[in-house]
Figure 1 (tube, rainbow, N blue to C red):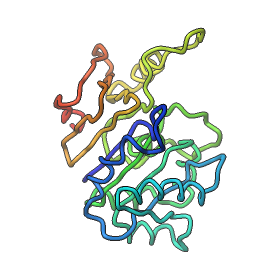
Figure 2: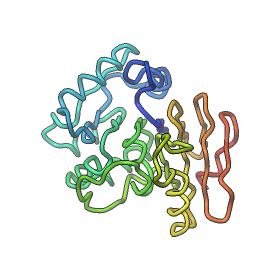
Figure 3: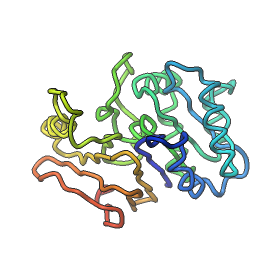
Figure 4: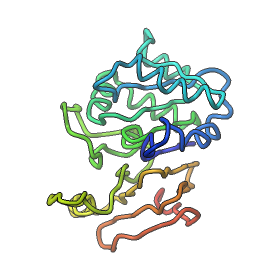
Length: 235
């Protein structure tokens, strides 16, 4: 199994998918044709527009994508894919469409048997057991919260340490502490922007300039830096 789970697509002042593009190139170096792109998280723009936006960046690193929405059979497209790429956007819509197309099990089996998986934001959420640590507005019923369950921990992408100035609502940490109170067996990875996780079988590597923040019931939140051993997350 080989996964690249990215917190966010774009850093301030940078082009789209610029900062993770070299890590994307590394994980997809073995593919000979096109990666299969899942654009289903797009809400305010078309799947065609999303595909073209991702294709332009992938072309810069010698790669290409073909969106699954063109396929006559989504399941056949997954079966034939050399790599699976799941874009960010709204996690709830993404999950609903994956469920409606009955793709959870076929994608999970495909990835567990060696097909590389790249996801950012919502695409990282969906790699987890459930989507319950997403930040997104629940714009539709996803027909179940279950994700691909490729890793046994949850990710909170775009993790923020504090609220914007003047905002009096809960912090991200407070929300995650509520989550682990009723889900005591799960690790939660607060994945800050500009960072990503590379998961190879039972090995987990944090990549990027910032630490991640880990949460689990019964333990104080802990900061982990790139280079530290995170393999215990796969236990």
